[in-house]
Image 1 (cartoon, rainbow, N blue to C red):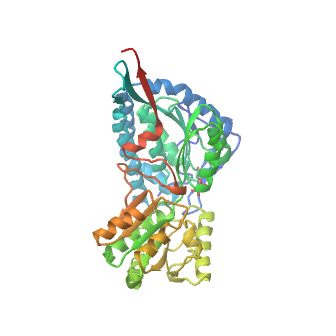
Image 2: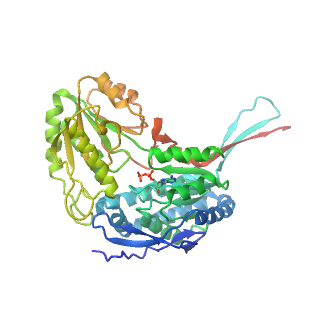
Image 3: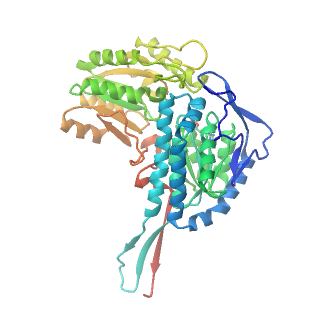
Length: 486
Ligand code: ADP
């Protein structure tokens, strides 16, 4: 058990600018609450545009020296940061569970997953290769070098307080960029703890800065409008992604965007049903349904619909809901009242339009923002669950007849992040995988995220990729050198 306000050797009640823990000119504070209990965890300085500008100046001043260091040195520092995260995984996970609510083992998993990005890009730092091109004339030589874009602004959400920052900072720092990061106001403590460890690892002042505050729009305007920032990397809602992209248009600032999803999860009648149920549980209920790659619409082929629904409901009935620090809990609270209200709205809209509750269906009374894990049957196109991201532990089951029909329904969305399907026939597997308009497809699996693979969306789910060797490209410029008179 933990004392409230939360205490940890990895916490500071400040932001981190140019290697200094500071409140800047903040005159107010904001509270960080535990969503499982409503208790106060910490009060932090409410930093804004002014502090962001100071941090950008620091990042800008630090960038040339950081980029000039041999890749092997940047790599070693990132590796040290990774080692510290692994060594402090329990402490970091406790902070994460306290401010975000996900069950402690899941939080620990996220910490190791976040650390894996830092490890991966510590390795990739040494492999930012260029290119030589055969010249079209004898006296010329042609070369391509790749250089860091410069100062990067990152804005991240609350659902993965560690992993979303690590995915951006690791490639940025690895290739020689410096960064100013704004974590979500609901979950700034994990970001602070990561910066404490970055400092311990010896990442130099100004290379990684953290601004904490509630005025996302003001901090975002400074990051997008400041000419010293060359790139914005954002993970969050499509709505805010659009605002940031517009704000970056004036300076043609580079953007990477990981936005909303509306993942279809398709179960064909030749699928292994038990495996499909396992996959649905993993994909739908992880983080209480609050991930951008969570199955949002479950399409089940007509002759296995009832069997799948029954098996899924039986498993869901066994999922313990509660405070993420309680052993065995699989479903924690939703992040806040607003998140809970959206889930309630989606469920009541579906019920009003003819859906049925097989299990769950309502808020759990008492402290904290808990919603019972839910399975809805008889779900149809006109319902909100068909169009919008629910971001909660609700599985709406749609019935379909043919392959063509389900592909059309699955693609009928402006989003294109993740999709999943379960099938046996190899020919169908290929056809469906190629026809789904998504950046990532899980085939006979409900979990596919890995630092080794390119994570990202198409359509209105975003721009760019995070993780894998491709993830470094987002932080690099290509420069072509043409040498004449050789
Ligand atoms: P979510 O629904 O997950 O909270 P948001 O897109 O609202 O997604 O938030 C993601 C991040 O974007 C958070 O850090 C939030 O503070 C920040 N944010 C929200 N609005 C803006 C804005 N107008 N400009 C910049 N950042 C913003």
